[in-house]
Length: 502
Image (cartoon, rainbow, N blue to C red; front, side, top):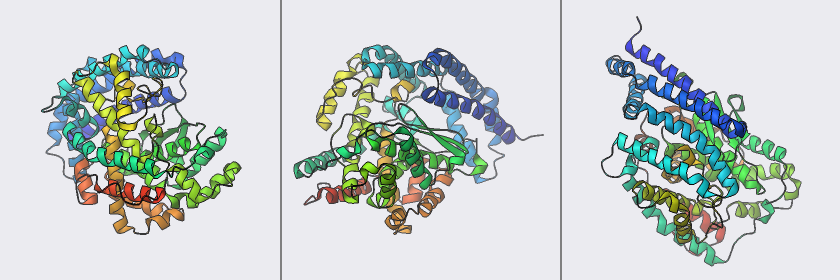
């Protein structure tokens, strides 16, 4: 007779199959589904989400989980029960009807967001967004929290993280980053990046971006790349990981969008094969996940050694760039200038975009800001932190897809990822001091192997804060990030002194 642990694993396989079907339908909705299918897709997703939720939160699952505790003999099984137990405790707090409603609403909201963004019409999207924030409040109350309503939602994406920690993180970054931006602007050494904008054939962009993601180690035999309005990565198995990118007049959007999503994809492909389609596979948190996308996009992809290797290939693909030398190209892709949109922001100003979203989410959740007043609040914060004002909603508060998906409490993990990418780099360079030389030679295997051994192979088996301690020997902090950013941009802009003191 099967043990309780074996029966639990069978039940988890059932919910995984349903979750994979839901994810596949979500991927299809953002890539190939005709808009006319939105209503039916919303119903399908609502029903499947309800089925998966009901199976997982059933009393049978709880009984198997409890009995399996005494049967777990390996570290792997104990880790599995920890991860499943946490998820079970969270999921059982949510009413089935609320889960189904959120799933249906997010499918409807995505299409409404696409249309509202195209028309730059926030008012048409506001009623759905209002309900999405209401659902977020209901979820937080069901989960429970001790200090701040935001804690309950943030914990879904970054286990153990709190609003107070986010406030401290942004407080440490805000002043130095604003000072660095000011020093760059006052230097008068702004670079010309207009040569990056042009009429770039989509097929050639697709070929070149696939060349890059293959080059850093993403296995196309276990993945693929498609196009979506807002680039993302999803997976249905360790062996089926989907990337998306977008093609724009600025050539770098596709290049760095693909590298960013490939960073997520490498993490997903890196879990042990034995854990495929189990709760142990995949990234442990959004902050750790984002550290990998930002590592490959920024630390590797925006480095001079990377383009020392790949610029000749880019010029072969797009001959109109043949007259651009490495130094000019490097400065152009690292141009610092406050911009309107987060996904197009440079390394230095990026975290200020995230700060704006964090503060707005907290204000709406606590009732200090009404959804109807969001555009004005957004524009005011953009002016305060970045010195720019969006001319319309499309380039303002409608630019991100996350709120349409109900992903409220998600944004701070982007900044956590930025900090951790540099913290992991510092640890890596203790073992691989020749990192730059490897990148310049296009030899990414040792770098990827280090990440696989230290991070990817751990999957979700180790809590995020514990994983950071294991890999770097210290908790997440801003010192490595601030020091790294300062060194890089001091060099690029020939600053006389470091405007950031880490």
